[in-house]
Image (cartoon, rainbow, N blue to C red):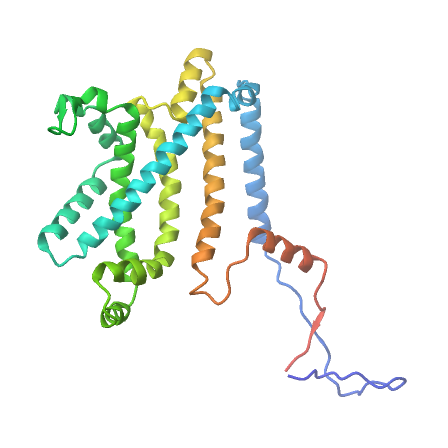
Length: 315
């Protein structure tokens, strides 16, 4: 399109029949302004209510880096990472079993997923912690034999409760990712003489990671928060440590705030890592990768001082 109003030569008057420049007047959204004011007022009232509450806010800062809290944070990270690794490995195995043409293995995988997805994590943790009531002795023959109370420690109960439950969800995520790969890829690998295991490891799974990674990151963030339920089996994670301090000091709400802030910090760090991991696996499918937070900040900074034209030519 050419500009309808051409610039006149120096010293010459513009043509009388030249069209006028269309002035683009932005539409005012009064509803947005009103909604923003209402939200700001409500947030201000919420902050004021917490500020005027009968709480010792200094205790939050005093106990934030307490040795017991830091130990609880470490235990939270350890059990969450190990449970996620267990869930990921077992989830891949269950996904392959679920898609198997063998009716026995596919039925076992379906039953596992059905049970662990259909029962609350809280109940599963209690079942593992009280397993000694059903099996007082763990007898594996010549390999291992010991009392179940010594084997099923709070850490072991938390790890099994979280890891085995996570495996059920990861199995469905992995199955969806594997099925997203075109069947022609498998046929081509078979034509090259690859076995089923080689095809799965070298062809299918690398391509399926683009679909598997985003929900897996969400599952891990959820697992970090779910680890707080391990307090019911006496596992000394972040919430349990905060409760212990609260019972001794009487600062119940303050210690809950400390636990809340630590969970927010942990999940934020891992959410950033999830973003960059998803961005890496999107390289083979997206022509333009999503901008990083730093790139977005630079774009907004440069765009802010550039400004826009006041008029738009008509057609």
